[in-house]
Length: 259
Ligand code: SF4
Image (cartoon, rainbow, N blue to C red; front, side):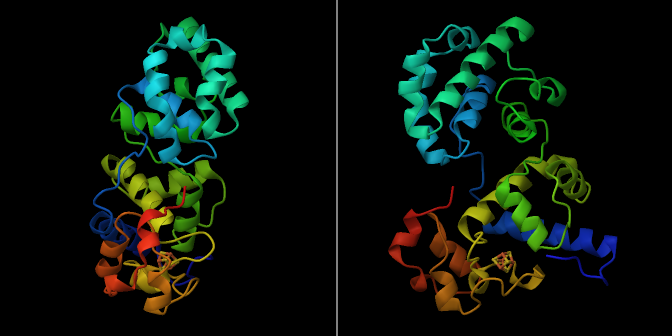
C-alpha cells in the first residue's frame, strides 16, 4: 500500500484516530489473549506463542505455571520435562532453551523478577522488542505498541505508514495516538487482523473500516462473499456492525480464528 499523495500528516493522523475509534466499537472484547497471572507467566506465555495460537498456549500453561512458579524453577528445570510439557506449542526445543535461559538470566541479573523496563527486557533470552512491549503493556500497565505481523499488514493497508521496519512502524503509529491508548490499540488492531482483515483474503465487504481504508477492495466487497471470511466468536456481531446480515456468516466461521 502506498500513501495518498494528497493526504496531509494532520489528515492522516485524524483518519488514524477515526480508525482507532471504530476499532474500539468493533472489538469491545479485545485483550491480551494469553492467560497469565504475573509478569513471569506472561513472559513465558509470549515465548511459547511464537508460531503458535494463543489458544494452544493457554492449554499448555496451567500445568507449566503450576510446576514452575518462579524464575529459579525454570533456571533449574529438567530440559526433557519442559520439552514434553510444551511440545504441543511447536519449536519446543528452542522454546525450552529460551525458558531455561530466561530463568537463569532473571535469577542472575534481576533477583528472579521480570524487570519493568524495555531496555532491560530486550536483553533477556527469548524476549525481543515485540514481546517486551506485550509484557510492559499487559503486566506492568506501561503503554506499549506491539508490532506483530497483523499490526504491520493493517497499518500499511490503511496507508498510515510505508515503513517495513517494526521499530519505525512502532514510532510512527505511536506518534498518531495518545500514549495511554497504545496497548489497547495494539490488541484491537491484532483482533481486526485475525478476524476481519486477513493476509490473503480480507473481508472488505463486511468490514467496519471500509470507508476509512484506502485498500478497500483488496478482498471481496460483495457482502455474502465477505461475510464468509469473518472469523472468531463474534463473527456475526462483526457482520452486523458492518451493516451486513449476520445470517450470511457460516457456523464454522464462528469457531475459526487466525493465529
Ligand atoms: S476494508 Fe479490507 S483491507 Fe481495509 S481494513 Fe477492511 S478488510 Fe482490511
